[in-house]
Image 1 (cartoon, rainbow, N blue to C red):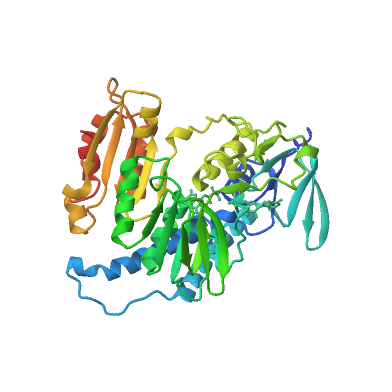
Image 2 (cartoon, protein in one colour):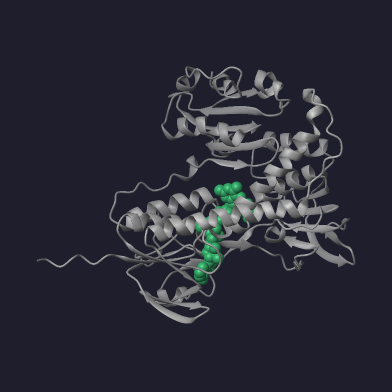
Length: 455
Ligand SMILES: Cc1cc2nc3c(=O)[nH]c(=O)nc-3n(C[C@H](O)[C@H](O)[C@H](O)COP(=O)(O)OP(=O)(O)OC[C@H]3O[C@@H](n4cnc5c(N)ncnc54)[C@H](O)[C@@H]3O)c2cc1C
């Protein structure tokens, strides 16, 4: 009788979207998988990032909708407010539920879960610091999926009470009276939306001329219009240079000498990779400014060690980390894998209106001088948008003028994060605009504007 082939021993360090998806996929395909996580399975994505922030967005949105029912002829419900401790409990309950689900799934797939902090001791070995002591592990292949954490500038010292990073933003006794938000990228504007909807006074420090500096100006203008309507103070061209605590609040000072007094400040100024203390040098893995260098299959400089998710500095999205994890596990297990096509990644910003995009954006086409056909329809003429009192925003479809293939699209409007799926499918499948034009959408629906915009 021939001997059973040895199962590949895969060590996964970090159980965020990249790590747990890779562990689950590799285990399903027959690998013997050990996942080491020092916090919760689900990772920062579930504890501090996507899930808690979107849970708060949902509550903020419900509150804003209840307050604005008058437009739809609904009587004023009287005094309604947010119960911050209950909202914090709600955030925790969702996080715990999802983390328990992931653990159960991985356990059912016989993934060994170790609670602790891992570091390499060589190219095929690692040690894990656990509550029970040090444990040594040997592996045939490994995945580094240790994620990232908020970047803290040297002029600020977060204390978790008044000076906050996004990791302190979900547990409140009462709503912040006046919150200054530093950083007007995706994370910053989502928190503006949350706190403005919950009824806090919000001041946003915008270092450039517009929020979302890397996106279409039209997109930024729609969002700024909403913020201004809701009384958000936009301090444009103001780069924060210091944050000081004052008894009951904070003072944020900017490089040009302006200052803002608030009860709290939230820093949303980017992130840094969790790659120090991993023993990368002992494993022979190279990194640049802390981001681990990978090829299109997520292999590091050591071919049997992969890296995925935020620690690689590629597109920092949970959806991307998950897809990378799935693909690299299949690659490891000898399956044919098509590398991830980053320009086709669908992205959303959970503000009101929502902002979603996929494929080529107008700014990208302009930057490389590519000739494209751009068609745009505002939601202001869409019956469903008017019925819902959500006329703000537009659908923009970008196609190739010669082949008529859909290259990309941007949607600003109610539920844009869901509507974009239609354009994403067209981009992914290289459909021509006619495919969108000829798809008979529901009437009245927001999707009708997608058909119209493709014409
Ligand atoms: C406020 C905010 C909101 C966001 N919202 C969204 C969103 O709506 N949609 C979206 O797609 N993306 C969103 N993102 C981005 C998303 O959270 C990240 O892209 C995603 O978490 C990256 O996943 P990851 O697998 O790289 O690791 P992470 O989720 O960062 O998890 C890494 C894990 O590794 C563990 N770890 C680290 N070092 C070790 C070690 N040495 N040993 C053991 N364990 C270790 C950590 O404890 C952590 O659990 C948001 C980000 C922020 C900051």
